[in-house]
Length: 182
Figure 1: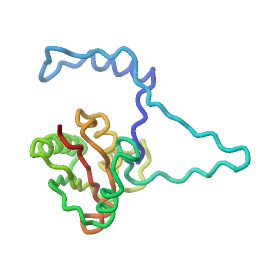
Figure 2: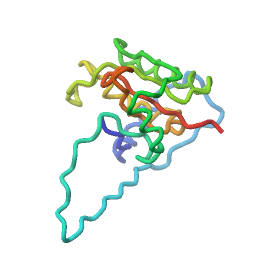
Figure 3: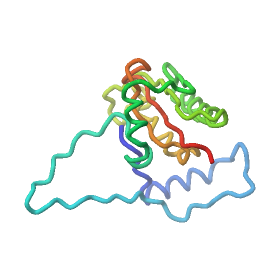
Figure 4: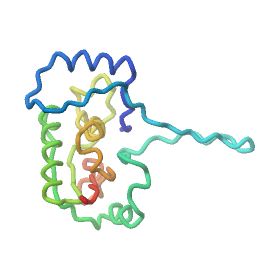
């Protein structure tokens, strides 16, 4: 899975048209209007003239929501060794996409309100899925989790998303590490 790329100008325009046709379930007093899509800043290091550019490696199964340095080495070691005991567990396995999304968002909200730092998210094992088939094939939930988290109101509270240790589900689960509430 890769992190969400943001909306292109054409996609943002289409989204505005769709959003204008929907009546909100819970109207808000202050609705923020998006003037222009926010494109993620991408910096690509220039290769040294003496060294050939490295071949691009495949992306890890779970990439961090924020920067790669969002967790210190102590956290990463504990996650990789399985020494972390999750504070909260969400099981999305065998849910439909809509039910999984709703459970994920409400579960993260519940975990945050309880003061949890680590969520164990059970998604099922990832499958090689064509992007056009992500809504119907096995592995669809896992393929969408990072996009759902990045687009949610909880994105700023998430420090990192990592693959779970084998004792907590291995490839079929993820750790969501939440930032400390201040």
